Amino acid sequence: MKHSNQPMIRMLLIALAGTVLLWWVPTPSDWSRLSAGLQAARAAMGAESEVRPRPAYPPEKVVRIQIEALGNNDRPHTDAGIEITFRFASPANRKVTGPLARFIEMVHNPAYRPMLNHRGARYGKLKREGNHASQTVILKSSDDGRVGYLFQLSRQTEAPYKDCWMTDSVMRFDVREDYRQV
Image (cartoon, rainbow, N blue to C red; front, side, top):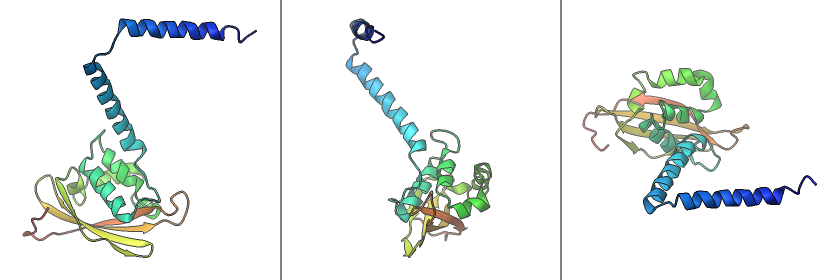
């Protein structure tokens, strides 16, 4: 007896949907705006929720993800790039640099600030030995200066990051004045 109203409710919902469609027939420009809005929402959600360590990411991809995130640091919100970068900090690194609030403060200091909203990046050759890897990156900072960073990574052996490459440290180094390839 309690299921006897379901067919009637379905008919009412179908009738209501039909009335709405008769009242508003989307034009091609409406569909375009709706599609663009959905794509932007998916991109914003994906940018934060999907960017995380994964066993499938090789060490050079982990470095690129972090560099690109820092290059667009304030999208979709303030310090979003730093938050993504923190996700790729190894547990050992987080013990020294975390929690996130302290990590954000550290990246805003003069040694790492050139990474934020940089204008270009040149990646050195990845060096890999077993479960350890390193890669240099030369950045063209927002003030057109050049600064280098050495990323040191390791493949994690414990859950929840088992088999994920994560960053153990990032060290800044000076770049020669005549280096203009970035």
